[in-house]
Image (cartoon, rainbow, N blue to C red; front, side, top):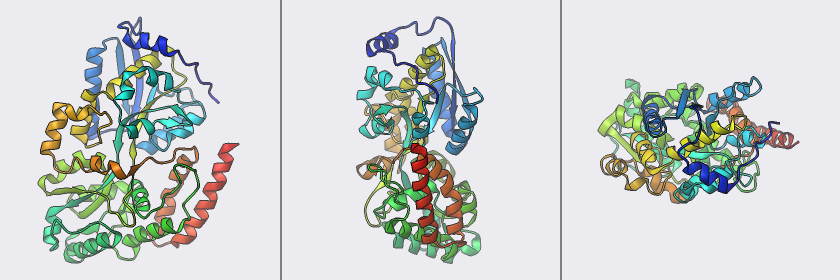
Length: 419
């Protein structure tokens, strides 16, 4: 296990953060992230602003791939001693690296930083594992329901069609597929993993209980949710199998105007608006049995193996990225939720809320949003779930059989990781 570097004192940290001589020489922070396209452009703008204010610090930002890619590559880089200095970590998967001492405990930094009082409670909570702060939020999201108003109109559906329950979603998806299927348009994108988690939660269940840690993969409401999701593909055929074997295919088909509805992260708001313009509508997630949505996204952590001056520089960037000015850039250009209480007062955020319909849906869902569990087993569970979902969605195996077996395997893996 990689040893944690000894925390500096809060008093010393306050002096350090207030100093204009953070490092005697230029410091480079290698930063791994997962953002391309317009999100990558927004991140680069934040980095440029930071480097303008901090000429002695260089942020070497590298787009590594999606969240799964980052986990895989970080696991390979650590023993090879090629790990970065800072890294974007998805909010359910950083616990594995915190547990093994890979991520630095940032508690002293956060407690000494006035920023901590400006973050929303949900944003503070997602960075805490076993009572210590290991990441600071950067991009926070909930799943929302996107639909194409032009496709709804062509299918004879009003844009105010109820989309509040599983039955509502299925009815609308069937009508779209029946009316427009010959034109290559399907009713709904096969739900990706974030959407699947959300649909399980709004069926009054979860995959793992976020408080007790109990495995709920075989709970009746979880099984019922997966049966509904799988039926969209193999039984009702309102969702294309292409979005099962490769989740981004469903998103891309929606952006291309070939799918009527998509449940996806609010972080897809920017690209969806660019693709569909005024035809895009954004509404809350359905409330099948309860109204509940998972909080997703990621935060930035610092590697415990980096030199102290690099860690200090990395935290200075993390704090800057969570400032209201930076967060307003991120929110307005991507659709990810504000994490800073003062973001909404920034001109960019005010303009976005006034001129971008639907960008506030995820914010309005916060009353029913819940953090998700982050013990080490979650990383294994999420990686394993993809192939099992494929077997269920394609009708290769029965849902109860798969989830009962998966639950037992997950419990066994959780016990193994405790040793």
